[in-house]
Image (cartoon, rainbow, N blue to C red; front, side):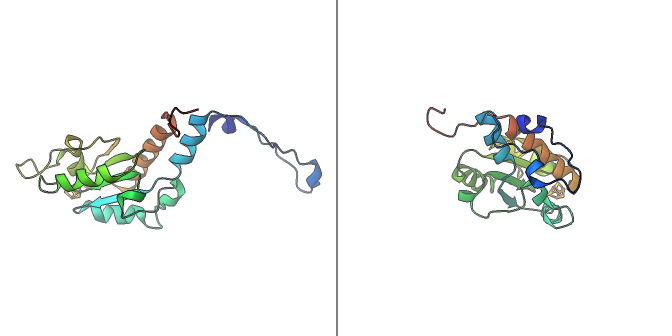
Length: 177
Ligand code: SF4
């Protein structure tokens, strides 16, 4: 929220009486900025885990890397409660319709992440059985390279997605306001 970021918070010496501490009760901002700010810190991932990248997903979800810092720590195992489809691992043509169905069951607004090279491009499985990138079947917002990606790369991907969400136009009512 850029307006809040520009606000200078004065340094108050210890012992200053509470009545003299400057406060503010009102600030102005734009609807898209405040909704984008709220949405970027309340990501609910749906982990569609099919292969070895799943170990890295468990690692990045653990306390050591703490995705809770980014408001993205609570995986939901139902598409009805999720807004980030994390495709973690290889997707075969047999699985593709299932992935597509789950994506369609997620409500708008929603985003998709290709986690690792298999989800991004098929990886080294350049064969007839594997989908050569999930963007052939669903729209992808962020690609994370690596086989498997390091947790830091996943966190970088989450932060890039947050930037994207923050800059989007957020329609929250019919006709908007
Ligand atoms: S990118 Fe590598 S680690 Fe991840 S699912 Fe593919 S082969 Fe496994």
